[in-house]
Length: 292
Image 1: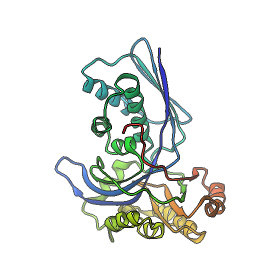
Image 2: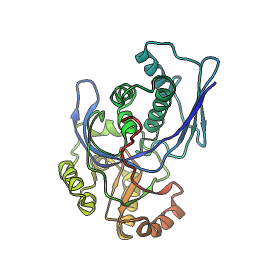
Image 3: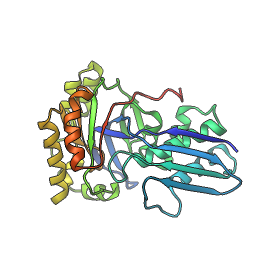
């Protein structure tokens, strides 16, 4: 029986705009996404029969058929062969309901493991197409790096890499399930929109200050009550302690700040982790090359 283990990588949304609701019920997105060095470990092991998912480090609510199982079935359907016996083990470090794409990153890692085990000649584009059938962020989590994401998030364009920097991530004690945030968006005034095109141009110039100045997320406009207060308080702390810019990632509630280097970020990281246990000091990760 063969076993393969891979590290996953979460993401932050440097800019997130929602263009409108589509006829299929999804929303058209316009985003700049960035891979970060916070992730889980995914191990796939061949077994005699069946599919089993084991989650370590965190208890997650799961439907009768997990995204990992859906991804596995979609992968083997594309190969035209039955699903073999498999056990998938997740060692969780990325918090759930945080806006960091941890679930999508785990699904992407399962697909990478299956490709390596069963179809190493499969191209990146083929694997991304399979991933997009399972979840909107999975294609990006397979590619990594810095990307413009459109459509549901599955239409990707590589952008110039984010210059070297550091992120402090801070998640309040509550979670915000993505469907609940999308339900608030329709027919709402989302206020000023992030300058996605300006951010892409700043990345092309390698101008970290201009990137940080253009951080933005329209989901922040639909936060209410204690949610809005907690996100705003963390942003104020990050900016007061030297962040070049700060914003909420994805559907939240994790807030991130950009710093020129890890040394500049350590002070506020220490302050925030004393109050918010799910605080992380991480770095940007460049595009994955294994699927080229």
